[in-house]
Amino acid sequence: MKSAIYMDGNRFFETEFKMEEEFENIVKEHYKTLFGPETIYFDLKNKIDTRTLGSSIPDGFLFDFNDKENPEFYLVEVELEKHDFYTHIFPQITKFFAFFKNSTSRNNLIDKLFHFIKSNPQLEEDFKEHLGKKEIYKALKDIIENSQNILLILDEYKLELQEVLETYTDTWDKMVRVEVLKQYTANNKEIFTLNPDFEDIGFIEPIASEEVAEKYSEKYHLDGVEQNISSLYEKIKTAMIQLDSAIQINPQKYYISIRKHRNFAFIGIRKKKMNIVVMLPYENGISLIKEHTVKQLAESVQKFYNGPCFQVILQDDANLIEVLRALEEAYKQQKT
Image: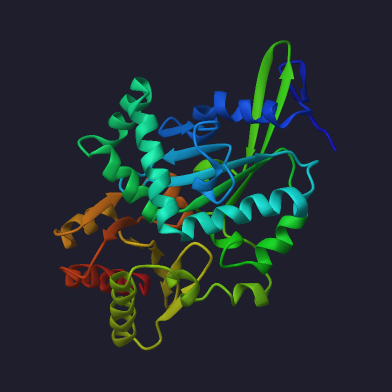
């Protein structure tokens, strides 16, 4: 069902896209508006062969540098709702899962992306602006190895998605982010709506049945990560339970929370690193933690976590003791 927006005496009509290419062009031309100024988006259609990505080429590649310590990479697929889900969209996305699991395919893509960036002076300058002194090839490899996401952009939500997300929790539910993008026009003016807001896409927890919620286990989060990260997680978990046997380890879709009376930390596990949000003010964080990167979080992010908090990034268990002290302090604070 098409909708309209009424603003300043104008009626903005929703655009009905006849061709997928029209919809793709909207994303390509307005990606800074849709995804934020700290993003880079481009496509390589007709520039790479289909074997590079499991016999399927995505509509675009998105690099999100909003969190410079944890940049995100997305294979982007833009689809119209009128396309059949199981014969068109489902097999297209499924091929991307196989690509991400194949190290040779990932390396081939990294090579292709690097050479394309180096051949485009403006694009190379954009990456240098975000990467600073980091070497582009190594940065691409680190980002794609650590962050493996698929962004599915639709002009209308597909009802089949909920069933698929609940059934394939280790692939679709874990790796696919879904956005519904609409364009409205009136008198040569445009309005776009994006649901959910891209800035919040990593924080939206699903409303799931108990059966589905049980699938968000520690195994779900640890599957495919490096052994040192799994070991690091176990050390943190053991230390927390030794601190208080009543502390709960609570896996959700995007993180594992640590709680007693309420959540006092959130662990986000990636392939080669771990991000921990600690429910203490940033000033406490930089006082307690000296040997790890401590990040001050935006007000909107702190609001999502329901209080003052900071993020610490771990790649191994070196100097873990100072992080454990911060977690212990957050545990004490949540009891008051």
